[in-house]
Image 1 (cartoon, rainbow, N blue to C red):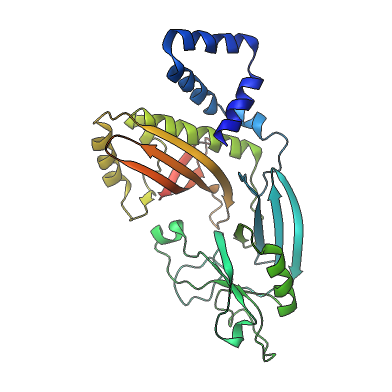
Image 2 (cartoon, rainbow, N blue to C red):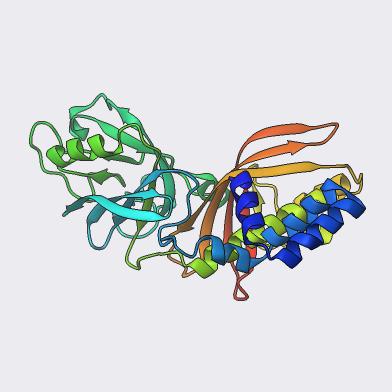
Length: 325
């Protein structure tokens, strides 16, 4: 992904700008050119240009994905395929059964969680009550856990094989499809990367302005991190709500990071495979899930793996990190 952005960047720059980069290279070397490119990635306008022809209403994804979108009020489940900024509806079922209204908070409240999750592979639940097979979701996710939500076993499944009728109480927070439609659903999502987005009443959609702002802020956060700029780095965290994956609060996290940054270590950090997804909620907040592959290197510590942030945009449109893993 990053290499593609570099190609687009160099194609798009003016002759004057290209000449400037050549001069920077001659005077300061290749690393200084990289710094200038990083600055471009922190520019919202660059990203607005990058996504200008893309449909990002359900988010931005670096590869082909399916998004299972369920509205608990309309009782409709839809499957959309996303491919390079183009969205197509592949499946729709009305009159589905979900759990009780409201966001899931504790085990046993019989509510279907509102949020954004991943969908696992088809499996046999071992009980004919759930139909021929089921799909598990990743509830509770990181944000759910740091917010103290409990429970689990939220599935997309079928109807009892003996013909028994189920209702919103008996689903226990799961999403139930007629068995014949579950079969169709399974064929569509088979062997694909699938996300599950569940909203209650209001339809939560992303905007290009928000996606571009998040991209720019993500790279500004990375730039501050790389350059040990602790004040700029911590500005991207919500001081009141932030919790790390281990539930470490902001004050302790900031103290730890200040100690690490004070070493002035030379860091190399790369982000790739970036996905930015709108996150439904009942608080009328603009929340997003950001996931990416991180390649982090210092002489004393190296990390390569997936990273996830849950962030919100404040009233000034700036990214504030709520949870991190």
